[in-house]
Amino acid sequence: MAYQETHPWITFSLDLGTDPQLLLYNLGRACALTKELATAAVSPEIHRELNHISLIKGVLGSTAIEGNTLTEKEVEDILESRSRLSPSRQYLGQEVMNVVDACNEIVMDVCTESPSPLTPDYICRLNRLVLKNLKLGEDVQPGVVRQHSVLVGNYRGAPAGECVELLRRLCEWLSSDTFRSEKENMHIALAIIQAIVAHIYLAWIHPFGDGNGRTARLVEVFLLLRAGVPVPAAHLLSNFYNSTRSRYYTELSELSRPKQGVYPLDGFISYAVEGLVDGLENQLSLVASFHLRVIWENHVYSQFRKKKGEYHKRLRDLLLSLPIDGNRRISSMNDLLPELYHEHYRNKTLRTLQRDLRALIDEGYLETTPAGYRPKTEILQSMLPKRVQTNKS
Figure 1 (cartoon, rainbow, N blue to C red):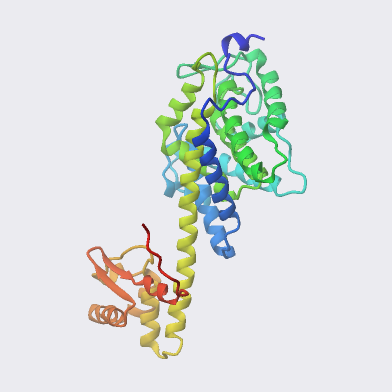
Figure 2: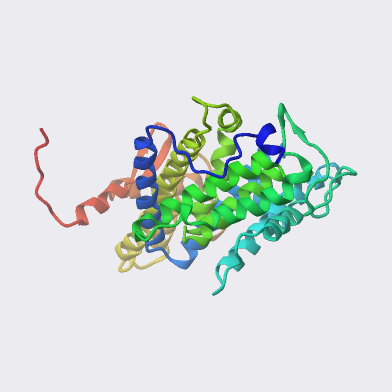
């Protein structure tokens, strides 16, 4: 076939280079962190918040890397039906909603008893969703494999006449024993590699007239979710690729350059897995902050439960209005949250507010810092079980 001459790196073989130890180490970390995130006990509210945050970042990443200029706040407004984009920018919102709809469809699919297999038709469907209601070139048909040559930067996609066959071979290879193991602890590791490799090969083949990158990243999300990776974690790679955009394109470009006559995939896979590990650690830190917030709120409510009257209720709500993982400057009534102001302070003076803050400081709940007021959540540490302190050599 012609692609073997023009694209010799498309080999349908998994070459991880000659020294994959660091990659395997990071894969092990990714698997452990994925399991920790999947088993983290969180309330339904926190679960929804984590999913919402990750979806915004993932969708923004996947569209921004292709040139979409919407901000994270604008994407959030679109998801919350608060968007007021000007007519000239509405196509940007359509791009975002297309990826959101595709992600939601993937989640619904993989949550069924019989998730869809990865087939050329399924990949075409994702591309059709990505390009829905967008103004496209005359030679671009959503969800239809291209019949013309494409050039992306300095990279030319695989020969048009062979794209259908290359998609078929790709799906067949991804479903082969190459990405399976009888060892249960290898399941997630192989799924991560499978998802990243699918992304690489779709970028190489470039089977569609437009939307190839977004489609490739959706396939990545699909394969991760199908393997049991938690929904928030499945969006991490898209966000990572965008935040390291120049390196993303450099790593993809390096893949088509031979190294001692072969085309190993370890460079891009290692890069992607490093980003996945960083993202998982950040998500677990976010989960920990959610837990701390719940524990802090419970502690504050328990401390004020026996303190009756409007005064103590006002102190309690003032304390709970402050961020537990940061500082807030309060120098005027305008610095209060609107709901707190309207419930407790609209008929009070600034002096009352200052006395309340001082009372919370005197009682050990708050401290002042150069950046403002900070809840002293470290008092929760005193409630942990005592343990022997060991000396580290």
